[in-house]
Length: 251
Ligand code: SAH
Image (cartoon, rainbow, N blue to C red; front, side):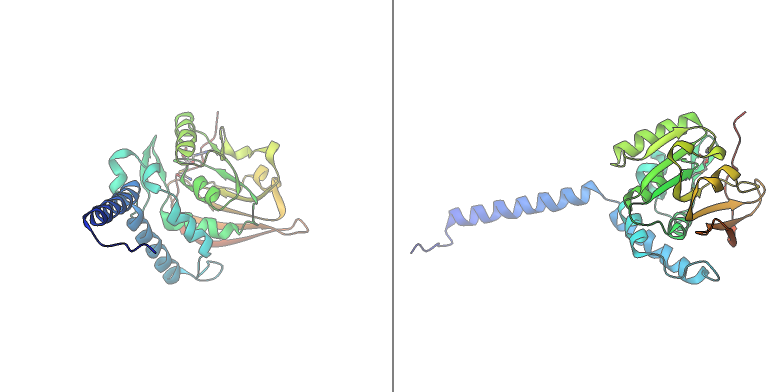
């Protein structure tokens, strides 16, 4: 039998192990110094959901959605000079007169889609790419369309850099949807439209859901939940007032 005595050599290796552990822990925190702020952001989202819910608006958001919001680095989807505000519960400018949506609204819209596991989602209005990343973090197959070419390019690059490169980004007018990839289990429109675009209704699977802000540009719109029932009947529900940038049209 061999006895290990706490001699100088052992002390040295103990110290070395402690130092290694310190470096590992410190670098984990350095990898993601925003993690605590993200946890706090999700706590705020849960509080707002609790206070604001009524009618069809869920009181308790799906734990999987909240978990995805805890994982997606929102600070990587905002301009560099706004990173310190990335986890405040409000929209932020992303250039070209556009915004990244308020985190609570992203959580709510994602929750309302109630996509089946591995389901196929279409987003209209890629913007920063954040909403698409949240959907991808939930394991969905995500297609997203952005009308501003520079935003589409930046979002595609950002999605690759953050590990969500499986998201397919296309530049174009989302009013027409993505017929080649239809039908979709869920469609999320993140720009306000005066009407529900008929091509999007067509591209929704029976049993599928669409979430869309409907109303005039620059005024308050209604966030609508649109359901295509298994027999093809359309049911709509106005959920809450929201303020989105307008859905513009390609000339
Ligand atoms: N979902 C985004 C926020 C979007 S802001 C995010 O997570 O960051 C709305 C976006 O819709 C803007 O980037 C705007 O350029 C885009 N948009 C407006 N009209 C559009 C259209 N017809 N088709 C596709 N995108 C459109």
